[in-house]
Length: 142
Image 1: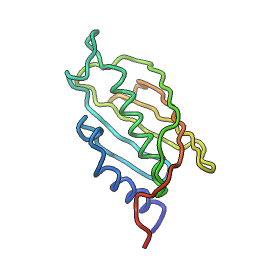
Image 2 (image 1 turned 90 degrees about the vertical axis):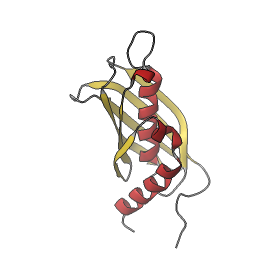
Image 3 (image 1 turned 45 degrees about the vertical axis):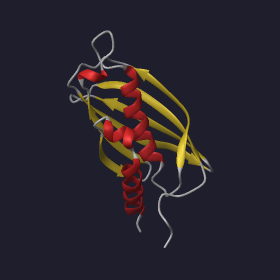
Image 4 (image 1 turned 120 degrees about the vertical axis):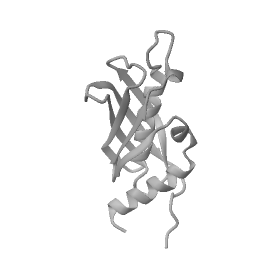
């Protein structure tokens, strides 16, 4: 299996059980070794008391992209620490995209940056996730 095929197979295995991302209407648009892009449309149910997208939904989209990016090597990987900086408010109906990329991966630890943009390409948020490998794999060895 090529690295790209492995990344896609791991993403498919994860997507099957990812109820959170699916129930929020996210789509997995791209995956490659150490990278992933997901998108989501902001609905009325995702707004806060200011009438704009609640930051938790932006964080969740970025976190899901982070998860798919760091799980592309057939190792089970979880978040150890995450931080987000919000740069712009988001209105209902906006289609957001989260693009995750690997910055560093050594031993059991990794660092991933995720940029969240809107349909015009404007940067909405910057997210950095630190990952940790745990026991297990996504695919069985053949």
